[in-house]
Length: 243
Ligand code: 6PG
Image 1 (cartoon, rainbow, N blue to C red):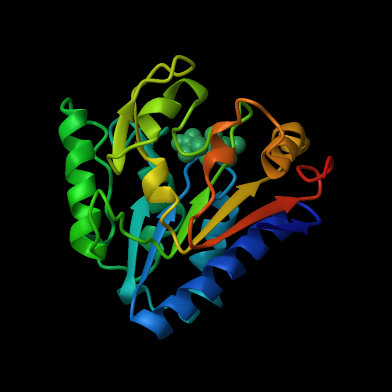
Image 2 (cartoon, helix red, strand yellow; image 1 turned 90 degrees about the horizontal axis):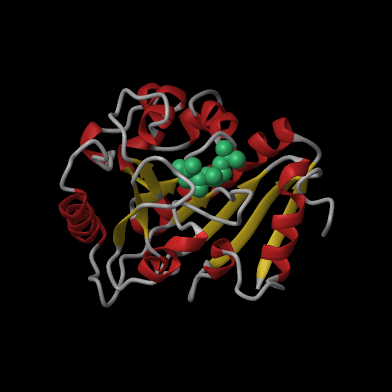
């Protein structure tokens, strides 16, 4: 079962997403003393990240108790304009008091990406507990949706490896020039909450198919449904137009 929340436009969606993150952060910190979030890459979440870096969200969230992970990363240097870490660093992480040791960057610039994926899995297990067979539970995973129905870096031709059991994988999507690192479905589906964030008329058809799960084979994003968690679609009116 999923929840669909529709906001008037991209700006309202950004504010709604920031509020959604803040609510989950405060609830997790109140319940368990910490908040572990996986950030989405791409462009859609930028507005929400910028709002989270400012009043009132910067004060509302105790960033010292937050661990930030990345749903995926492009395999480029961290100062490359395509780096998801760079985008999050510039819009949010450099502006809040989160200890740098609690920002778990995926080192996509390294050559040994298989090792990086295994190290990322070991890190999240060391921070959150769990194991490959009982995946760690993130409090919130933010995800975008691509025009081809991908999410994180689970592209249509990367679904087999994304089924796990590894918690992170290196993938080379045919549609992309670069390798990617991505959280896999077992890790995503262990989350306490997952929220897709999508905006714009260009996403309306793929959003409808994912929400309705009416496609065979399903889009990769439709394979994300937390076993024991909530699933929310945070949309603007344009992306929700076919619902
Ligand atoms: C990435 C993202 C990817 C993104 C979608 C949507 O690294 O590109 O993780 O899954 O969320 O492609 O991207 P936009 O928000 O730019 O439309």
